[in-house]
Length: 356
Image 1 (tube, rainbow, N blue to C red):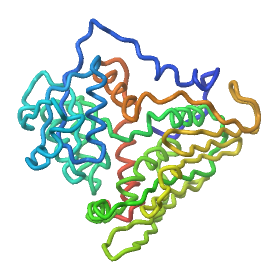
Image 2: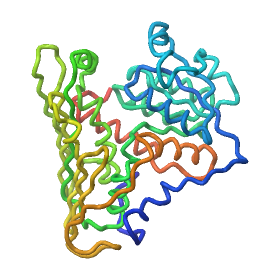
Image 3: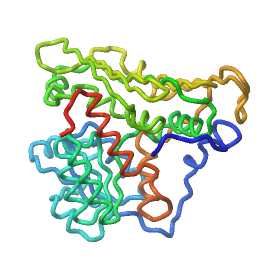
């Protein structure tokens, strides 16, 4: 996505702004899309599988591949894996009926696995982030373009009702010229999580705040300069308290991540401030949104409004519903290769990591 120009915005209530996303027509005459999942070690793996299983009108989960036998044995008897069919990766890739594969491996295996899936002719849902360097991400999108396949990155906030409202409001010019963006995602990391994330030189911001960088690029595009600051509170080498600044021609943005925050979840936030208004989302899940306007816009009067958002169907439902429409040729995917490559580049810079 490129930075959003001013244009006519959907009129009506805040619920109407999102109704097209939240109204789900059933098509009983259409067979579900055959899908598989590779990997169970990503933090979102169980949630993604549970969502596909729940959306049985859209997806038929043919099988799950997990190369680590100990891991497979550990999760197989618990939800949502109980009763699922375990197969090899080769079995998924060689099945001509499977159209979509969700990739939920450890971070370092995400992009290599995705490339194998694309070369086998599969559309992919790829969890985040897209590796620890930039070149493999570029190669991934080049492969998808060559084969006419879709890559959907697992940046779940794209389909969060508050962020959908935000993106539409910015596109419509409700906030005027954007001058400031601020975001923060934190948590208190357990000892085991600290050990896991210490393996990544980009620290906690790299693994967690990538969701907010995706939103930042959706709103403002690529910055002209990125500065990264990081602290390590313990002797394990894990960057657990980070902030990055992003300079644009007429705006400044900051995104932080603190893995020592016992109230990190409720304090997660994203705010966009412009010359004619502001939108503040806090917390992110379940989302609460405050809209401030210097003049009336749509059905909202001048002033401050606590916007009544519709309840989200589920954390990952929106992205998998959207992916089904793209795979079936009903729409084009809103986030293309240029956007995803830009997010990966900016994430690496914000995490203090080299590009290659």
